[in-house]
Image 1 (cartoon, rainbow, N blue to C red):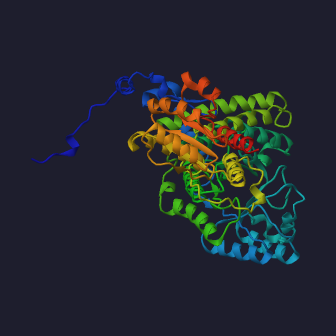
Image 2 (cartoon, rainbow, N blue to C red):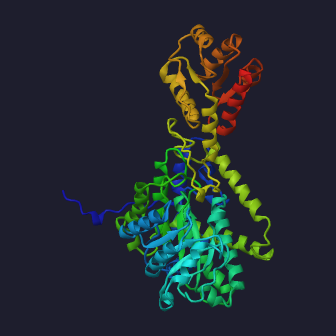
Length: 562
């Protein structure tokens, strides 16, 4: 019997029906446990439906979608690979290589050598022919001398972006955008998406008021964002900016025109160990940028925190080329448009960011808003806390860490000031390496019983670059006591079931060698006071602050060794 698929219909399930099934699957946990609060303070629901979105936005939904689609500056995504090189010769050679292999926007952010006349002349030729993105400190940056070398007859056709703390005046270059709302520094300090959006508007407001006219400002304005690993959040951030930009223009009594969104992969989630994970993060960010509507994108190499290579540079470029050429995502106008979740999150960002922008403006603008640094620092502190307690996963750093990876000694000055989430763990690795701590896990009972806790403790120490040795399955209290008495370790953690641990710890503490710091895996609230009073150092358990715990371990070992 043949089946005509066109005749098959599946019954639609309502939100209430789904909620009923979800509640049953939670087995006593409240339904609210499925809700998640973001770093911006926005509550994410476990399921979004069309009815929920229409109820939330009403006729504003259609306006939001239309705004996002009409305020797109370009129909594509340009590759803006950063050019690096230790010498002028290497720099120019890398520039030529990048253009030959798919780079579209010459991106220059850090030049470690002195620019001579010949190099300036060569750069002027390339910047005349190709679009560019220059990241400079101020109007005195040496690379800006290149604009004096470009032939006067060609200046009107030169196109590019200049990222600077203050607007750069290039009156003969109408297509070079010099008003930039650069939010990358705030992002690197820990700012959340709402803060970044509000800051972008506040910077734009300041620049628009200082410009000869709003039209003169808008025609040379662009925004510069860093894109992190929160995929859907970053898509919503870029879409929200376009909605906010329309409201911003209306505030100046003008019709909104599309402004370019220039973006780059965030390095605040990058780590110096297990660096190939950074490559995955970069790919995630690039794809989010493409879907969100970025016009120009820079993918930082996975080893950019130390020193890039020809291979890592090529991989970084190909991440974006693959996104452009093979994903086909750019063949769709606003590919995220209509997604119940992303449209809802976009609207949440718009509402919260506009409120923060108005708050900044009412205090006198971005320069007068003195609370900004403190607010961003509070967000950064929360990010660090989430990473250190594993509420936020940083693969290869706080979870699934590779303990044998070595920290590179070289430091890229371009990113040295970024407040990276992995930095505390890298410091922890250095501390443990210098202390040369010998760590072991006392495994007691049957393998199937102690293995989960032993693996957890091992993973806990892996984040510090330590591979703990294991005692093997010890079958009796006397055997465990004998093993500990002869153990040549600075630190030992007991991994066993709750019942076995309660039997084992008092016996071990009775004859514990004074040179060994002893911990237990798990939480034992009822026994904690008694055990610690008798010489137990403490406990290792899920949700614990890894940095704080392991720092106390090294401090206790040093105290014992005195």
